[in-house]
Structure formats: C-alpha cells, structure tokens
Length: 238
Image (cartoon, rainbow, N blue to C red):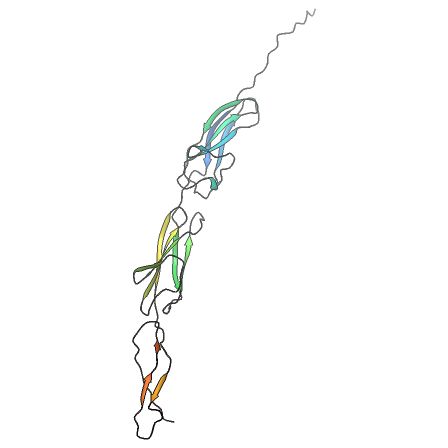
C-alpha cells in the first residue's frame, strides 16, 4: 500500500558571496609612459559571473577604473588597484594589489652643433642637437649661450650677437624631458674675420704736372671687427 503524501517545509537556497584574491598590477615596474592594468582571481561557488568592481588609487586618491592611463600618473607616484568582489547579487571581500611607482629615465642629448660653423661678426647662429628619451617624452632641453665665457642667451638661435673676429661662441644644451634633466653637450665656433670696406681713395695734387709727387690718401674704412686697418698701395701708370 502507498501511504499519504506529505509536503515538507520550504527552504530558500541563499546566494553565497564571491571572493577575489591575487590582485596584481601589470607591469610591476612601469614607466610613467605606460598604461597599467589590474587583474585578479575570482571565485564564486554559485558560478555567477564576475561583476567585481575595480578602483585605482594614485597617491591615495581614487583615480578611475578599467585600464589606468599613463596620463593619470607621473614619475614617483604611488599606484595600486583595489577590487571588490561582486556577483550581481552580493558583495564579497575587497582586496588590493601591491603598490608600484612609475619610473622615469634621464634623457640624453648628442651631436650638439652650431651653424654656421664659421660665423662673421654680428652673424646669427643656431644650435641644434639630437634628443633621446626612453619613455618617448617630448624634448624640453635648455640652451645656454656664452661668448668668451660671458652669458649671451638662452634661445636655440642667438640673433645678431655683438661679436668680433676671434670671439668664441659656445652653445651648451642640457637634456630635459619635462621631469628630470639628463646629459649635457656643447659646441664652440670662432668668429671669422670680416673683410674691411674702403669707401674710396683720393690722389693729390690735382691737376698733376710732370715731376710732381703724388699722394694717395685712403678714404673711410668700415670694419665690423673694429680692427685698425693696414693699407697696401699699388701704383700703376697708364
């Protein structure tokens, strides 16, 4: 015989909160020009999908979620990510990664060169160089000019300096990427002599007669190098 069927009391199967662990960032030794990602291990006994929330912290301040852009960090910042487990129903534990510090390497300059290489008095000169930076930072190198050791300017072009033949013009470039200064390079040129300009000569007496002595007198001389002119005379007849 089959007895009476009796229903039991009802129970509700509760959701179990998920767990996150092994929270880590990548790369572990980032440069300030690299984006940083956060990963973790997710466990849920109910096999619910991972809907955990991620928060980045830069120097202790919340700085977004997802991938942390390099634009959000600077060299020397303290960066870590924090993950809170969530399965769509219940919130589980919160775990954070190790802290990493974006690094910056010092930039370099090379092949510093002044052009023209043989300037004359008053000529403008321009300094050029090659810039290298491992993180791809922009060139913010500084320039310092001097003439015979005296400071003369800080722009890439030294416009119409007051110089004379024999002056030494030097350009010193210090590499900078906007964060740190790096190597230094320099180049030196010597101001070349500029030919003087003679405006004319006069002969006296005028008119001249047979047997008269003649005197040749130079006119005004213009010399950008301010040197005392030395005259060379050459006579010709007919």
